[in-house]
Image (cartoon, rainbow, N blue to C red; front, side, top):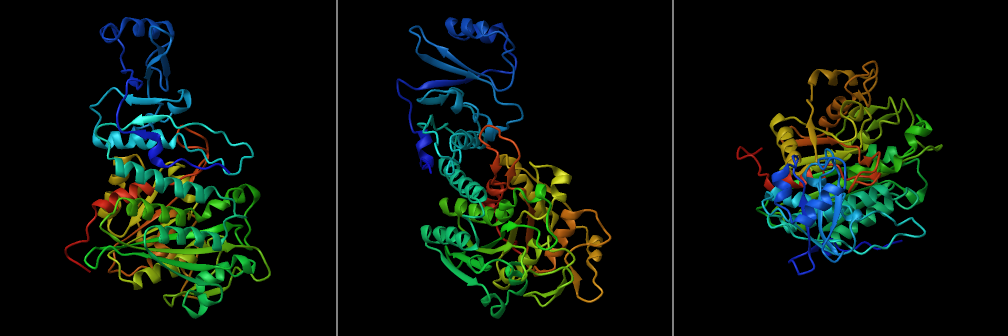
Length: 478
């Protein structure tokens, strides 16, 4: 398994005589622009043929003695600021590079630096012959916020690698170990409730979902606390940690089960957001709550038609064992609410309906207060980590009716708005006095793009961390 260079290894603090300029080709390359270049550069560019305005160009330009003297480039199509430079490192020789344009804004410079590094950190842990490649260094763009970019890199890498880890190597115990590592690194405290203790400690729904797994993969609830000060606001980050989802007795087909190691993506994102904030010293007390379970098929697995108790006291009739994540989150959200944080944000790879609605790149965010979901969406837009507000349309919630329990876990007879109805289910387990947002995530790249390899993705880590850094509780209080 290959080691990963520290995030700072992909950057340099100053230029040297050997630093190679990175020059962005303008959208319109007329004679005036070409005349502004050294004549040998203009001649070289014109000799390339084709349209210099094409997306994703990387043109290495030699000097008088044949050495690499400059790199001319155009951003990849639809790359945005985050991935503007991400296609460059793979096309460049080892060396130190610097953007020639120093007028880049703070946000754009920070995102560009992030993308430069992310293009150089493929997950090769399971390859027999990983590629060893020296970092291509970028001189920090002048306006880049270095601590923020480095924190993004660390948080996104943690999330991606957890999601990419095969389920055989990442059961509930291993997920707990990853959480413990974070707590140790940042002087946090961690509590863990395992197996049948979940019943005595008041997590019956989470236990029901995970009880069908073998004893070595027993379900557990994790609670991490990072305290800055008594006066700092407290944010609870709640993550769905289903380390593998067969669908349970309502078993998934092969195509739907293929990537279900990623069903713990919500917990990975919660840990990634926490790490991103902790690395920046954000003035927030953090509570991270994770329900780590495996939804297995066994003689002891919970069944369709079972009625489950929850920590809140509501009873839930199981309409579908493949709608298990919301059952785990129900107990986690109730527990988080009992701790009286100033804000609760939950993360879950919860519904396929979200992907039908918005595809693989846009993540739905829902909140009781539309202003909260829109503010989070705006934060995501500002850093190129896109969230899309969806409404919690109350009338849809009436479709959770059960004839024998307080509610069901699916909307039988109402096969619409699945992402919204899942959010409405979760809302019942969050105290009305506490602001709350729910993110329905994908945590996967279906195809490789520069800086974004196929596989695990850290959707919403940068968006939520950016939002929380600037967030303050309402002066009205609760």
